[in-house]
Image (cartoon, rainbow, N blue to C red):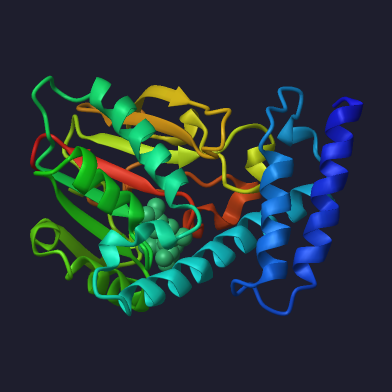
Length: 289
Ligand SMILES: C[S@@+](CC[C@H](N)C(=O)[O-])C[C@H]1O[C@@H](n2cnc3c(N)ncnc32)[C@H](O)[C@@H]1O
């Protein structure tokens, strides 16, 4: 690692120290300022940053930061979902959420990449979104702007998140016909629900952005063929990974029923990855199982 990367890591650790001293991660001036500083520090490309070369202490700080970012994002979403839910037309006011424009850009990017891998005429019949949260902006934007006939099945472990999300969507009779919410821990959902040939889209992170979000390595996606990996360099923070469920998986570890689990990729250093609210998966099924 060069001098520039060392300075970056030092800055990230300083911000972590300040964030970890906060009494709460609920939205406030201090919380917003520190997370904005963190994001701006991690955003520029850092081609020479090698995560495997970070010291154990910095690796631990990285894991803690990913968890803190997820927690803060969840609280921010809860705050804005409650606020929007108190308005007459919540879906006409989504731009009150400070990062709404980022969601528009990210969803557009994801749709553009996804479209290349779908059959020419395809608006997929069903999509599952994992970790939809109290403010399911990705599903809303995809459904409203890009995939108007797709049925979106949103999964979240948190019943409160789902009740806040349903409340928003119910205000739009058209949208609510094809948005469904399920309270489930995704780790209890198995690969058997994805048909062979179905598409899996995952958010990952690259460079110093890996201090904010978990990294998904292609080799973690057992039973899937990775079709494309895209690393944005602008204010869209997440990388996008697209994979296709194999018809004849050759290298799966099978459970007692001969089925391979749909496991969110989780490296040892990223134990929280499977639980990280910021690593979403969208499984698009062109072929119903
Ligand atoms: C921060 S929210 C982000 C979603 C965002 N609203 C969007 O539209 O892209 C992520 C959600 O993931 C959920 N989550 C975390 N671990 C999960 C798991 N194991 N199973 C299902 N949901 C999970 C959290 O409860 C949280 O509400």
